[in-house]
Image (cartoon, rainbow, N blue to C red; front, side, top):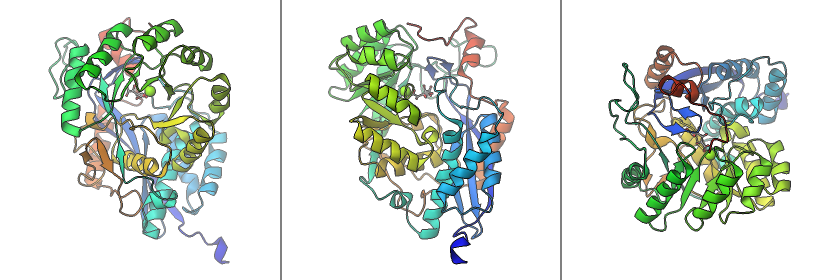
Length: 434
Ligand code: GKR
Ligand code: MG
């Protein structure tokens, strides 16, 4: 029967863990290790065409991806509902623990949404290639042709210590040191000069909150009128959040996750002048009703990697719109397959009202798994690919090189805290810290 024939039967799902060099970026749970871990999904169909997805690289997550991927063989790459059922059934018997990929910072995400996301993106990529349309067309079309990103600023050491050195004596990498407001302004100047960003976000939760507020004020003085955000990843108490929020009234476009939990965020929100955004207190669909009921947030940061893929992210966009929440986009260290997917979603989401986050400037340009250099920033924005599917092609030599880096680097899970403790043994990621 015609309708029983898969339009594009899945013949194989390959999952390749990869690693790429990452600078020592500081955050509330520690510091980035020398290697960022990712996984690349190839979903191959009987036509010979393949689709690509990208996700976290923790070994447990890779194991789950492979387990679910194996169950998709024989199914139709066009039947995303059926693929999700298979993923749900497979993970119902999952006994693995961990594998969230975010170093303890964002752990309330669901295994199913995290695992299904790159598989769904790969299915959409292959659908687009077979139909000769970009993924945005499959998502209902484009509201914009290019996507503005914010320059993502981090406190950082000069370089990774290594060879018995300490953070203070580390050999400098090409990004420079940023441990105070002056360092952050210099970093912002470099980013704005190089990429043309028209919004800036500072990752906080690292130093005394007043030092971080001073960094924001220094940025405001150096870049008058530029939208600024500060994200301490819930490292602050409610009291500190209110104090700093009031200090930065009129300076911040939004304050991201100043403190933890629905109640704490709601209390802060009632007493600071700027909107509150989150990628910590609302990271799954069942977090939305309590957050809306408590009045915890103004803006939800989408991230297809943990919201279950591009279509589920569209559902999130609809819910945000319905409840009057703004929509922005969160990021973790990522490669070009993820960037392509982020661009397609941001183009298709009518209500993305803010410049999106990306860690892109922090990686070396030829550290990637896609062919060539398909993404160029112009005025802080990147054009949405228009070639079929995601619009990127797998470079097998690069994939093999980054896979070797994964095998050789010895890391099997992102763990910013353990790495930090090599240099500061008493470091604690417990929150609130300030
Ligand atoms: O890369 O260190 C980092 C960030 O802190 C990241 O892990 C967060 O998930 O960027 C993120 C955020 O907005 O919270
Ligand atoms: Mg955040």
